[in-house]
Amino acid sequence: MSSSLIFRKGLDLKHAVAGMLAESYHSGLVEQIKADDFTYRAGRLTVHLAREFGFCYGVDRAVDYAYQTRRRFPDRAVYLTGEIIHNPHVNDRLRAMDVRFLSDSPGAIDHLGSDDVVILPAFGVTMSMLQRLERRGCTLIDTTCGSVLNVWKNVRRYAEGGYTSVIHGKVWHEETQATASQAVEYGGRYLVLFDGAEAQVVCDYIRGGGDAAAVLARFPSAVSAGFDPERDLQRIGLANQTTMLMSESLEIEKMLKAAMIDRYGEADLVQHFQAFDTICSATQDRQDAVVALLRERPIDSMIVIGGYNSSNTCNLARICAVSRPTFHIADPDCLVSPGEIRHRPVGTKTEVTSSAWLPSGGPVSIGLTSGASTPDNLVGDVVLKLAQFAASAP
Ligand code: SF4
Image 1 (spheres, rainbow, N blue to C red):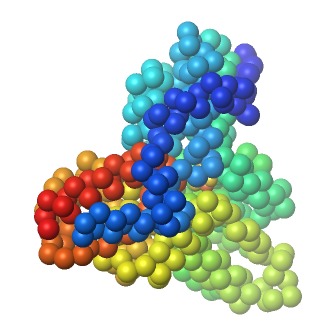
Image 2 (cartoon, rainbow, N blue to C red):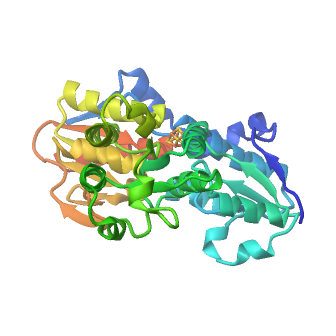
């Protein structure tokens, strides 16, 4: 078996790629808006920008390392296991730099060798993927975010202490799959919960026992192999995918804790229930900022920019949609005309086209935010389009 060389702290080329990164993702207009109290005015249009938005520290670092990798290994094949982050614009730019995606060709991994370089994304990879790559002897550039590593640390501790990891996350998301694999690697078990309704199923079983098969049927691909609800829900430790909605994660924690107290009593709780908040601070800051924006500014409607498969972006849109007409758009091209917008409504999986999205006749006030994987240049382009459309449809 070959052994891999792993770079975890970049490739000492930060300065060499800084100009290229700025050229690709920076926006002078966004900097100007920040300096103007996060406000942009043009004619009848006012845009209010959230005070925290866009690239988080983990994404910033992952994209930086990807550019450094390309620079450091100009003559070697460079791969990503899949999307480096959930933003089509960024992934397309990497493809244009001849960074190839292993997810495009199943089986390609079995043909990799020691000359090949593979970048691991910000949300990490499963243990089985890591071991496969190590067996191929590839050079690995690990961009896994520190906040994700923190979740893994907690999950390993649960496994070693005999607690089942109950993960509030999306079972189809790479980060949650990677986190679950950590539990198994360290001899533990896991169950992934998507929302409060699924948490209620688990709470009901904890309190009253009952039909274990029915519980398993509710989580067909969201539990570790051989999961036994009777045995594996006696001691649980809670973790989150880092980009979930904080309020929902806290609610699920409360529900599970109450169920454990009902079943085992308060005195013994620590033997049966552990919890650590593993929502990352960048996600939290963006959610708090959009709540403040909606509270403090006179917003008619919200635009949220980010990949449709970006968990943190979808959650920002969920927060906004509670009180304002909200348009989650993937990129500036979704603003088709003053009378037409392509967007994905909250809670759905399909992009739709809506009309009459930009009020005409008089002042209009639009709130704007973007997910942690959205570069500033896209935010700047959206502002310019809004200004153009507001002017052309007075
Ligand atoms: S959203 Fe949070 S966990 Fe994910 S890459 Fe950004 S900082 Fe890291």
